[in-house]
Length: 278
Ligand SMILES: Nc1ncnc2c1ncn2[C@@H]1O[C@H](COP(=O)(O)OP(=O)(O)OP(=O)(O)O)[C@@H](O)[C@H]1O
Ligand SMILES: [Mg+2]
Image (cartoon, rainbow, N blue to C red):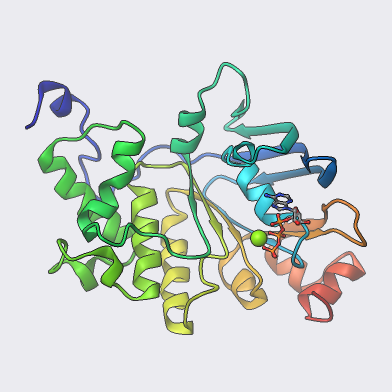
């Protein structure tokens, strides 16, 4: 049944049109703990609006923790503590007056392992986030939304004839693009991606990289990757995290990706990007 309220809160009227203005994300002096253990120490980073920022660094240096802090998922871990600020267009998402749900809506997340709802149809998977965030949409706007999100996720042509087939029947690369489409349905202003291609073959990886570049026109993207070629191919900005010998993770160097790869300022960055450790 479609209600009057449904009709008034319609989601994107024009498929393909930019959702909202581009947003800058800024982390200021982020320190994070699990219990007594400090895992990040005063990490500051500006992730420019409409850019792709890559977070790189060896295993265990705090990249995923930092990413989870950017959309308030860190606080789901019972022992987790946090200090510092995360500003979305200048407003702290941790301000006590701000609602958790608003941060999660504005800042979406795609995980390492594709996690569609396997028994749900492709179409239902795309729309799943609307229910979780209490977003209403009419039936006709839902059709447009499914199409526009699957197009933006680079999956439409492969699934347009089987939207009612289960999401679990897609290949790994297709499932990851379905998860990207699902994240886009709630119109996030920032998309966080934690090693989104690490389980995928090179062809699927390239498709997702192309998708990311297209998406960056309307969503600010932050990606964690262990693949240096990928960081060099897709990102505009890069931040190198390091936690040496049991000390908390810090950013050793950050800046323009081409400069970081061609002319790193810190010898540790040079060693890492050239595959000499990590
Ligand atoms: N839920 C948790 N409880 C306790 N410690 C944790 C938890 N999650 C992460 N840690 C610790 O925090 C540190 C940073 O972990 P994190 O997962 O952020 O690293 P990472 O850089 O993403 O590593 P990888 O490249 O292997 O994914 C590690 O020492 C890890 O053991
Ligand atoms: Mg990680």
